[in-house]
Length: 300
Image 1 (cartoon, helix red, strand yellow):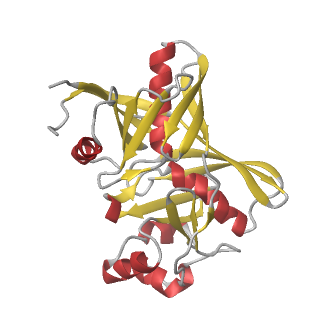
Image 2: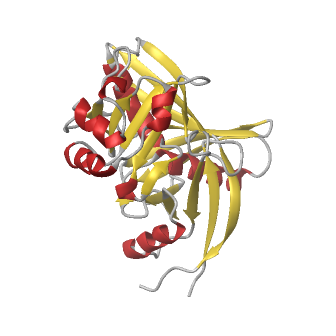
């Protein structure tokens, strides 16, 4: 049976064993959906990305992205990590600026990858703009689901909201970093919350060394906690707009995630606003390779 090359990389960090780990499986053209899903469960990382030949030869690659439990149309940390991996292979060890164009289920995702003086980073433009998503954002339900007090939810003009752009997230602002550290999925309250609101919950507050610090819980998707969530970071733009945090023009923010679980991640977020509406969202970050080898796919 054919063995396929794979690599793992830690994304949204410049340090190995920090950030969000990603598995990249190449030459995946002949894999079935079931084989990819079983391999993603075997890697058991928050996401695994499978690289195939592009449908359009002018693009770099077609990719499919999987949670351990299901395929998803788009995700940020696989996009960043895979683009850096492919650009590094294509350009070698020197400095470069390269356009990596990925055909994702959600649409075409252009990624600019740059290496200068040994530092490498990538920035993608989100393929969809976020819109409001239905669900119950009642503070009593949220507090019970996260094991915090109702009075600890919200700060300034920030209130809970649900937004989607492919994936969807419940955004929960909390009053302080201390509350953020205590928040976690809690018993029957959590089950009630995800039944009425959302299975992916992004909890955030103002950061000490970043603009915002966040945690993302999605145990039903095989992620008790995600060290860095690029798609949620992009959709976070809608939550910030609703809170009155975005002025006209372009604003650049720094987000921290994964701190409480010992895998600190650094995410760049750039948002274009015109006439009070989000026009474009870009997410940026670095990645560092960790391991590589070959994997034998499961039998069909």
